[in-house]
Length: 178
Length: 271
Image (cartoon, rainbow over all chains, first blue to last red; front, top):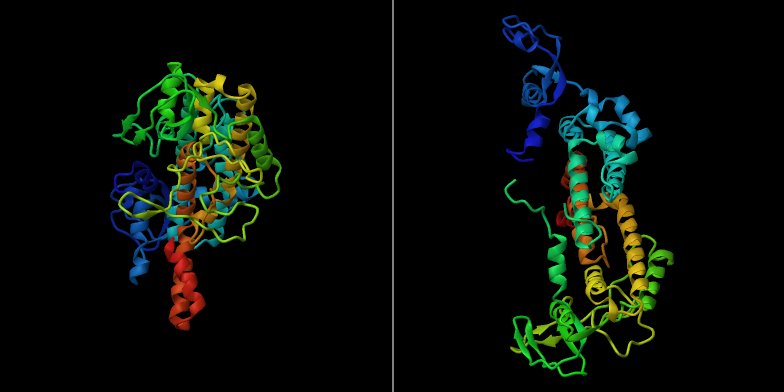
């Protein structure tokens, strides 16, 4: 995660449900009515970076401005689906940067079980990715459905494996250089 | 992206490195000794055998000035044996067949023996232990002891491919060899794939994954994928790791000094 990493920036921009604990004057613009106040108890989806900032008061000892909630991509339902079969879940539809989001969320929340589920999911799916990457016909055939559901991290993985397998075939003279 | 090539070495680079390996040739013409950067080459006098770097051997082969003697392992029988070990043997179900033993290293069978490496000396008197790529693993050996198991050298895939491509008439039954090489590669690829399951051992503290016997080309091929997987597993498990770390620090603060605990801590710090 570096300052200039575009994936890290996009992860930070993903939305997180937040509940305001205090009344904030003049911040109604977040809710869509500029000029108004935000009442305490309002639920708004805020970008990860903003929500994290606003909830930080709790650590400083002062009363916090917002409380964070689990993003929809990491709810109990999704975890159960991942436990059942990691391969059939369309992670991209849940969040384009699913794992990066998971990492950030795990920094904020203490969720032992989610670590295990995500680790297991990633392992099972990466084995599948490796299979598809070594398929000489490329990303066509039965794998299309699965490959479309890869999140950004997995796509990079697929690309790395696929490019290498292709280079190998070209070097061994089994495939033509395009 | 500033640099167009991916991280790690490309197949052609690995092939280039493999061309440094020494192979045995039978010259057809006389050639005076050459002073190469990698060391002097003895004069070629037919029909006396000589050891040359693979690149020079291939060059002479293309010019029909020499025949290449296939390396000891690049025959149908040793390859068939290795394939059998690789696919049938109980001990190697999840592991790659062992690499050729280093000098002084006891063979796989008597693994209780103490390794007895014989040092070599540089012209300046410095002591060193030779290791690949400075060991001739790809020369044709006359007298192979029968209890020595055949083994794939580090550059097996590259050398096998190159020899099949440009010196297939020097190999014994090149079609059979080609088939065996292909089978071997597939068996090993499948193992590499199955190994993804144990990779989280590499992502947690103190863990590791044995890649003994994996060839240069296979390492180069899997590097991008494997490091990516391990890196991400590490990131996902970071919070758990953090908790473990804190717990351990707490334990240490409460319990004072404890030898066993210290050991654990050390393993963990190495990672």
